Image (cartoon, rainbow, N blue to C red; front, side, top):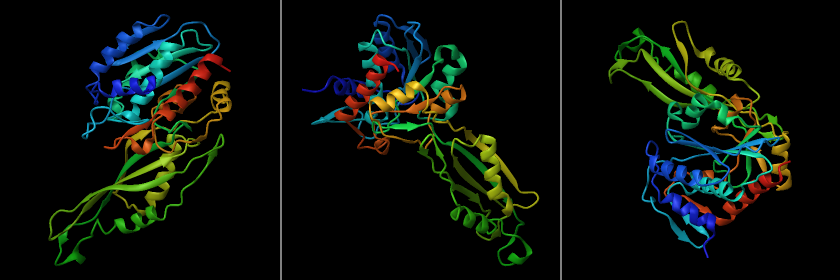
Length: 355
């Protein structure tokens, strides 16, 4: 017999919700949540917030995104034993199923709960539905802690690293390639900088018992004029992943310290994308209860996730979901019943028992 959480996940997979096309799922979800006694439901576009108002000591926010990446021959759900295949199974319709079942089953929680379902997570940050909610109705997102159901394999991934991208422009002087000594090859100037990035010595700071690992990588290069012209400019895009013990400003200073020794007057360094890090703060009593009573593995989140939005508001946040991150966005995306059930059980314990 198929577990109810697995069947609900399959039903969610069969409702298409690629980014910018979440309306159908949002309509169904809005109707489902408004039918649950004790929930205040607010809809902003294709984003939905549902919360209890029981005047408990603590409030927990549990969030998940509605959208998926485009289908790749996997648009519909398919069972193979205790494994469910389909678009979004891991990222993150399994997590949504857990949230919906919690809302359905726990109507008198020991803590107040805010369920946050939002659109457009899988696309550019400017379109992010959670960002929209924080701009439009921030008062409805207030909580003592936040838990996002991003795929973590049913372990807790605390906080997240920040990410920034900078475009470095190195200049040269054009000349004919038959007489290169009359110019300066901007592309050749990248040699030293690329070697420095390849030899970059990363940090591994430990925060609240979680080990983060920083990185700095060249990710794009653009330059050249013609096959017989010495290039007079080259642009290199560099990505820096930084641990949450650094502010964004401190991370930029560090990034410049690596790159600027290879720059001359007239060259430029421009930050073109920035998402701040989020501190784990696992000391909060609710976080300690979640991890301690359920013997959950806790590790650092090396990538960036939407927990950073909550962290910016001073709300400790972690990632905890039943899917596997390595399966997200793949044609073979799937989820296992044991991970769904385990994630639900841990969150049920937190909501029913509190601290």
